[in-house]
Length: 168
Image (tube, rainbow, N blue to C red; front, top):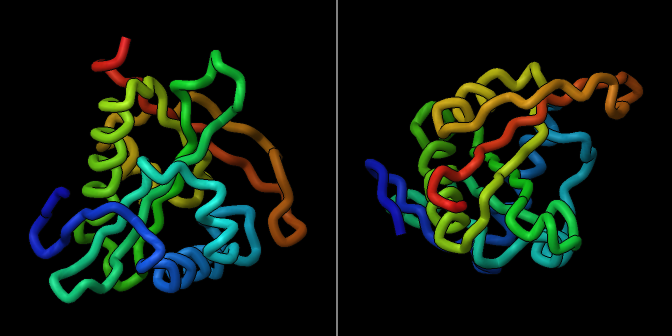
């Protein structure tokens, strides 16, 4: 567990399900978080995320402020140390270092597990996410131009990654 001011980072579990999906949907509704147009069910979310690399940021009353979760990039053994992650913060909790605390928890857990690369795709318009990732040691690898349509419009995605200096 990691604490930051009034934010506590704990393992993300089914008890957080409704709040996770609500925060995910809020990010979707804003339009610059994902290509998804509707949040998955908890069962879909749970099945697609690595249980040992997902965390919830909660306040002193247990209210979920944000979450981070990771999935495998590939089933191929060569990519066993590469994951892709998503991090979402409740709109009214932004600017309070919630995403930074969640990214730190993910980095700590993945390095302990021997994972050498964490990656994510971020819309270039999501400047707050790009900035928090840069502060957490991620770098932009490149731009995937016109990689997918979102509400009928072609969108670019910035590919960011963090290579662990601790895992060789």
